[in-house]
Length: 149
Image 1 (cartoon, rainbow, N blue to C red):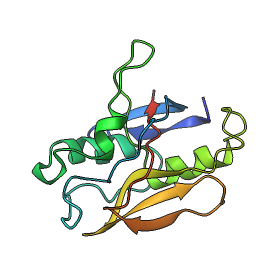
Image 2: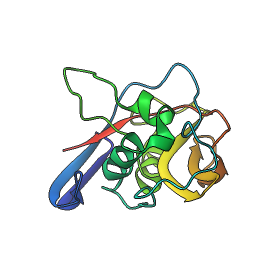
Image 3: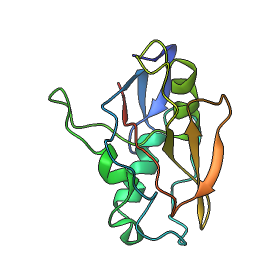
């Protein structure tokens, strides 16, 4: 686990569930675009707060513009669990601050978040820096799935 909230946070597909923890899953071995369409606004993918990544990812998955992309790598089955998703901007930023605790202290890769900014850009985080970035959806980046519970 890399995030613990004693009060809990809204999570799940409708943000009506309450979760207290975030954990990181297996890193993608390959890079991918954010979405198949790199110039389309994907409805429901603007959430940035902790807890909104799952909803963003589900909306990416359900969009015809995103037949493939970063969300595919995020939807892994690991440890017998299948509720992994692409983290929101804030979830990914918090993970970056805890990278040493999860064995990623030397990681310099850039990872997609599920938080879209414009029709052709989305948020990502390069772990060597402490600030997140906004980049072109067509640019290949790694995926680091998380799960909330």
